Amino acid sequence: MGAVYEDAKKFAERYIAPDSKETDEKGRFPKEVFKKMGEEGFFKLLIPKERGGLGKNIQDHTDVCLAFSEGGATHGLCYMMHNVALMCVLTYGSEELKEKICKDVIENERFLALAYSEFGTGTHFYIPEIKISVNGDKVTFNGVKSMVTSAEYASYYLVLAPSEREGINNWVFPFETEGLSFQTSLWDGLG
Image 1 (cartoon, rainbow, N blue to C red):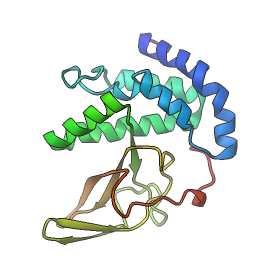
Image 2: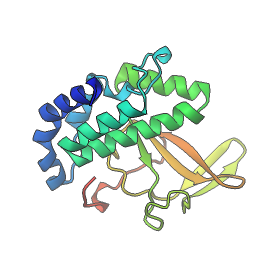
Image 3: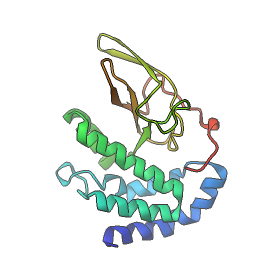
Image 4: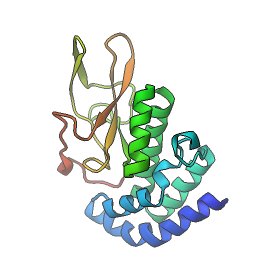
């Protein structure tokens, strides 16, 4: 393992492992640990250097996820989801969206989450039941996503929803989105 793994492993031993059992037993999100992840720069791991990030690669991502998961499954899973969501934005987002989110991650230590699962479809992410309606430039979403472990704590949520045409689209919802709400008592499980 390389230096990135070793740094993440030290972080996990110091901050994740002591918190892990309580996190899982109480079914709570480890917000204090995620705050520390942001402070230590882990959220900007995959952001290109030219955008102010660390410019690391998929191997580094894998190493950090492994180290964090060795400390606590929930921590590793939620960190992985942040990086997957971030890469979706970096790969497919508009230049304006990339700029906004990268700046927020780097300067404000914000992180992202995936909100793909649904009660009726589980992990079949590409068969969403959520409904959209389009009226001019306004899009309204109506549906429920499930198993969003970092709900209420992430700053941005990526949501798969049917396209106005054929297929599906990946939408980004800032935490402050009007009408967005969370029902945290509906899930009782690991991760």
